[in-house]
Image 1: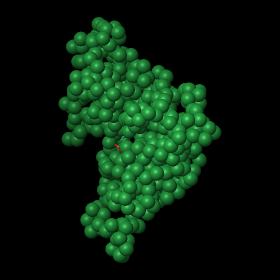
Image 2: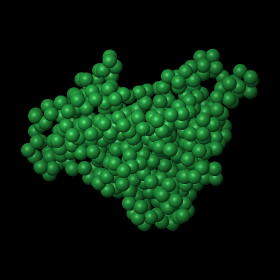
Image 3: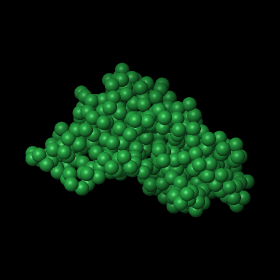
Length: 414
Ligand SMILES: *Cc1c(COP(=O)(O)O)cnc(C)c1O
């Protein structure tokens, strides 16, 4: 704890609701409870609020208000986009995605494989970068959809979405991007970006949990995932979650209001954190692509120790962070993302993700750097691995109880 508060360095897992967002939501949790579909004047405020939220999203993303559909979360947006593209192309049985996707897309790929689809999971290099030639040669006449995340939740890597979209468009293949980690952190102008579908989530950008949105380019095929009433122009049935949608609209506006300043502030904090850690702790490496990363994310591996142990010890100081392991229950299996990067076993086990956000301060950065240095030192003193090779450690490590959980058990799958 610092100044009586936990130090929250896990903003890629979820974020605090911004006070501005809460303030915008409150009337719709109190007196303004009308159903937007109702005809009487009392419901007009709710109706108008949903319209406004569409406009706020369109302003941030450079699209048309009617190209956005509000959903219940990022996962629903991803599922809807993939379902739409496949339903619209029933004769095409090939889906291309990557090995480093969030479970919201990865698990869908695995499910489609069981359903008889051919699924290509593109690999990445040691920095987590995709090979554009591999993508090009994977696309065939049978490919219905390509889905590549905009920014990775574990490493913070930003993928070349404009380039990937252009490749897909040239080949006449639909393209979806999971932009849950990118929206509000990376400049996105959908009027210029060759993207057919884009998924985002409220709780990663200071709106509440349980609301998301899906961009569907005008003219891109769409099939509703939920069937029922005519909400969201008949594209997403179910009474609109008006308070949450209002909150997400306000969060869009907030992100747009101080975009450059906030990005620079996050970058300065992240860079200081990394340089303090790297200079004071031997055998530490930064995972991901330093040339193309989210400004608030760092993923660091400390040789010979375990991420879970680091997290438990940080927790005693009130520091919240994530590890790079796929399962919490005594497993030594590194996350699917770090495995895809080929991070050596002795390093991958000791991986920690620190993700900064709007409410973090430089004082907290210094506090975490200091505590992490002492935690790593203490754990190394008692590490049974410190004299072992990568191979020996790999043989020691029992597999995760469900190797296919893809982080679905909740530890770093967020
Ligand atoms: C958090 C996250 C999701 C899932 O969003 P939910 O709103 O929690 O369903 C999907 N993709 C990425 C990259 C994420 O970080």
